[in-house]
Image 1 (cartoon, rainbow, N blue to C red):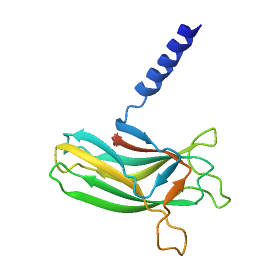
Image 2: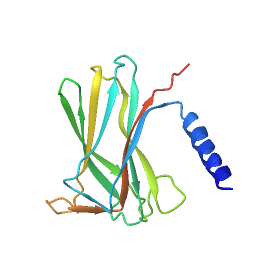
Image 3: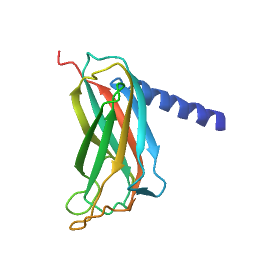
Image 4: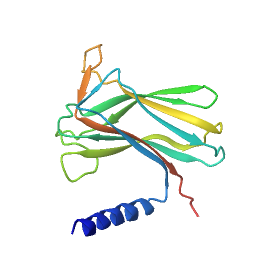
Length: 164
């Protein structure tokens, strides 16, 4: 029975992964309980295609402990030549009634957030994406030291679908 269940799980994983034809890069890092404002989540990937456009996403998995309706992120994209592009981004994370946005059947929701659309990589080589939370309470200058409710942070690159 254990072997049959294991084979079924492996088969489902393979089926799910093989259906995701647009995925170029997809990785997650776990956040242990709270996301400290000084904790930077980084992803490294190699990109040698400088011609084809790609879509890039930040993925946030959060649960009902997330206390805000939005999230602010500072994202650095470091190119192989050392040039770094920094963006400060805001995304909505909850409806006006407080219910979390995103997909999921339990109290954990996954939000796939646009980072860059139809973007070409300027140089071939190794890239690093670094993500840091920069949430602040309304009216407060210092940032939220410990952000509750975020369980994982991910980064994804997808090929752009052709419009033929």
